[in-house]
Amino acid sequence: MSTTVSGQSGTWRNWAGNVTARPVREVTPASVEELSAAVRKAAEDGLTVKAVGTGHSFTAAAATDGVLIRPQLLTGIRAIDRAAGTVTVEAGTPLKRLNVALAREGLSLTNMGDIMEQTVSGATSTGTHGTGRESASIAAQIKGLELVTADGSVLSCTEKENPDVFAAARLGIGALGVITAITFAVEPIFLLTAREEPMPFERVLAEFDELWAENEHFEFYWFPHTGNTNTKRNNRSAGPEKPVGQLSGWFEDEFLSNGVFQVANWVGRAVPTTVPAIARISSRALSARTYTDIPYKVFTSPRRVRFVEMEYAVPREALTQTLRELKVMVDRSDLRVSFPVEVRTAPADDIALSTASGRDSAYVAVHMFRGTPYQAYFTAAERIFTAHEGRPHWGKVHTRDAEYLAGAYPRFGEFTALRDRLDPDRRFGNDYLRRVLGS
Ligand SMILES: Cc1cc2nc3c(=O)[nH]c(=O)nc-3n(C[C@H](O)[C@H](O)[C@H](O)COP(=O)(O)OP(=O)(O)OC[C@H]3O[C@@H](n4cnc5c(N)ncnc54)[C@H](O)[C@@H]3O)c2cc1C
Image (cartoon, rainbow, N blue to C red; front, side, top):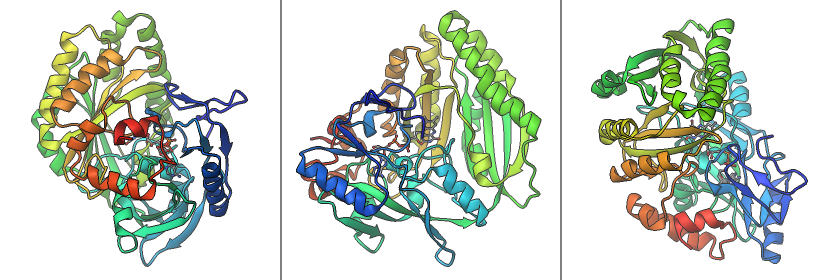
């Protein structure tokens, strides 16, 4: 949890360093009762409340000038129900701890994102997702939730118990209450074979529908200023396990993706004209490889080079056109983009504020090295994404407001009506929620 620095200065900072906040006070509750008491005390003092995870959001979703609730003492597994195929975890549990504990029990989540540093509740609250043909975001794997609401009471919800709350609170951007525990669907652990392979941009676009249809998890990275991509196909496998070799894994994952990439970005930031050449070299540095391992070791990897990110979900059928427009925009501009554009997919789900709510989706994520001006690139990219009815990731940089989002999400009104009922005084409000959900 070292990424959310809140030192003696009292300033909280997110992972990317682009958001800071100065809470009036911080609380680290060790039980649901202590958390309820903290919410009631904040109400008595007329303060707002915000639970924070590991600060991996690029938006100010977790920022507060009221009471900051830290997750460190609300961690661990509460129960595993093998018959039901579920695990119940405390809300502050980091995903990496959950993944390791599940693997020890011979269990796994079905799908996950690129990293596993986040807390379970922080990750699900903004709709953190990986890539999948049938399997959706982490929030879509939730079977039950427990949350402390604005009056300090504890509310449980599942498909059967408080179903209206369940429909919305799986992805609540912290607006409905403080989550204290989450029950996830789990399955017996399985093996995935990953095939990573460089491929020309034009070929990936021409074959995108087949690549998506033929693979359980397809994603690719396009390197701006080049016609090169690196593709990744993950499919279930009968084995045997064939992990990435220690040395080659270190070389590709640590040295090329983190160490050399960091240096390349320093050079690019200092001398921007070198960026296209660096992009050409970076895009060729990674070679094809195939390995087979348990899910979290295939889905996730360390991300040590810090960046700022914007990501939009567009209808899946709009993906190739969106990418073509993005490439033309970069090619015609003076922009120097040293980070690849990441492309993933998700099937439609039934969560009110999910970026894939009711719609088969493709995600396009643009990144900039931390400390490099990103506004011009993100503004131009956002113009393209919104022209394709894009929905921004709640935890990644965007400029959309409630008016736009109400049009982008058919069930937006359902969410805000529930918010009015559960939190009429906006105990869990902050500037970000005022912008994206309305006052
Ligand atoms: C390096 C990196 C890689 C990433 N990879 C991916 C990826 O592959 N896919 C993807 O979709 N996203 C990705 N993200 C985004 C990230 O997963 C989300 O922003 C996520 O929300 C961060 O989780 P967190 O624990 O840090 O929560 P925070 O950022 O601290 O908080 C996020 C939100 O959750 C709320 N929250 C936290 N705890 C609670 C609680 N107990 N009850 C109620 N609300 C709560 C906060 O108030 C806030 O609104 C990445 C981010 C980084 C920095």
